[in-house]
Amino acid sequence: MSLIEIFLIGIGLAMDAFAVSVCKGLSYSESNYSWKKALVPGLYFGVFQALMPIIGFFIGSKLKGAIEAYDHWIAFVLLVYIGFGMFRGAREDVEKDSDMGVKTMVLLAIATSIDALTVGVTMGIIGVNIWITALIIGITTFIISTAGFKVGNAFGLKFKSKAEMLGGIILILIGFKILLEHLGIISL
Image (cartoon, rainbow, N blue to C red; front, side, top):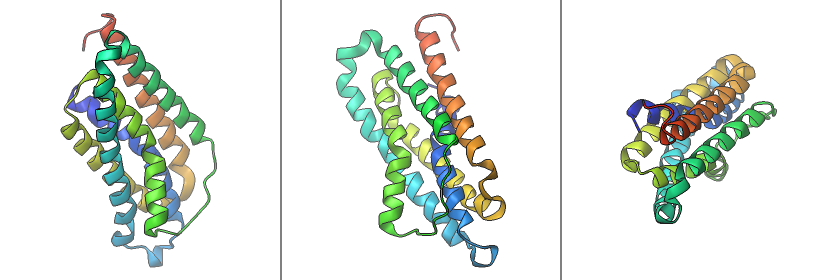
């Protein structure tokens, strides 16, 4: 898997965190906005988006021998499923909530990184360098979530659904690419 593909997966996975960060940013007026507040969702979401693929990777690595003959189908189904789930989520309304306490942020970070756990399982099955992958996903999510807080603060919910739809499209396309490469239909 190339660095560009990993970066695109990071962008796709970060869209849920971006949407939640936008909602958090909505809760703060321009007068009480600060970069320190914007970094809070970035740090929580970035760390969890980096940890979950590592956990998933080790689960997938243990299963690899048992499912090697059809691992590409599993990767395809998981990524397409996650992608379509993001499409469904793009249509849901999210309430404004300014609580950024530890309990709230940990729960939101777990909720927005479950997809990353599943992607990590896929990466364990197909065999990638999980440390570089997790680092790229975590940094990408950190940047996108921090920016999402500012976007929410400045523009509101205007971009939430578009961001989640884009993330879904990216994951679906990567799922198809993995399947088509393994079947020998394309080689990139």
